[in-house]
Length: 503
Image (cartoon, rainbow, N blue to C red):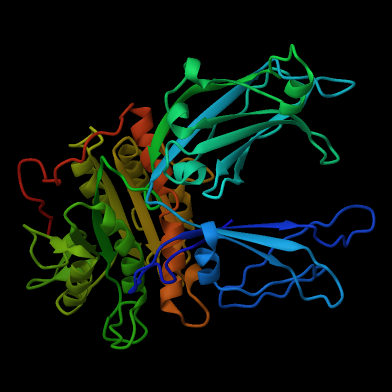
């Protein structure tokens, strides 16, 4: 399956819809001597791919042809090899719904049929989503449980859109097979359900008889080939980026470090009239996605590592818009404007201290722990951390709060310390205490710069990876505290007083 969506994920200017393409083939040529072919498909979208494989055939069509076919299903004969019948290809298109839910499920079997001569069975499940034309498309396979007629398969999570495209009453077919090494898996039986039935949790509605139609037709006393049941209730997940949150307001702080002279072309803060500098690209790439999950689109944007007018005091916590009593900016465009204006008024200076920045956000996260707010701290820096021990202490303390930290490193500096803070391999600790959970995601911007100079592509790549861990970080906080979805909260207002910065 392939999904076609907006060509430009950051600056789409034309209406677009997402369409799922499903491809299947019939009667393909056999290119292998001792077995059948191992076919793969290549879809060409504005680029060419060279493949060192046996050519089986081709067709040319437009997406419009597929969508416009009866039931969104187009069937054509494959060509490309003179004098050969290459088989047929079936291409289906279905517009994806706006369903943003994901579901976690687990199944177990009971008294499944024995299929192996010298053992029991090695069962696995295959889930199919029904299509609008009455056919079915595979959407999930479980792992194989070896030599067991009462298997318990591992829990898995998947988008509801993949399971039923948001139609809770659409038929979901589940087939049960006995795995064989040669790929000729033995059919045990099948059953049908719907997402609405599955969402009822563990009950009498979630115990399904596995039926083998051939056996049922031949044997009068045939009852079933075992049963499959839900092992526990569905848990609804609402994923950041991919899935909308209906119950949480994301509250984003942006901190930018200010080293070097922005008037010099060698500075990473250089204000080039023709293109964004590295700081601006990173801010725009991440911010334009995050802002969609903030209800009022007002962001406190602050800088650190600069001398402020009029007396040149060094600050690690100053408002980019020059207003310490109200550092909020209207949307990411407002943050960008404040950033550019601050470059004209402050004198960039070190050192690079992260702990005051983290503690600043942690104070606000500590005041709201009911799940109605989740705080994201975005730090953009090109320096080596000067207060590593204090920063680790701050992160360990913040790990129990509803917040995540995104660090984007720009420039050629070595970022070994940032990798340590990320905690993907070794959980960060301080003074013998381990962080309750991983809340830091670090990426070096240089790894995402497109060599052809395509800044839009660079920002798209950066945004994808820099936000990759936020969903699990968010869910880990909510789930460990038993916080369930609730109605949309009111916009965030700081407790008791307006947000102020220390200058």
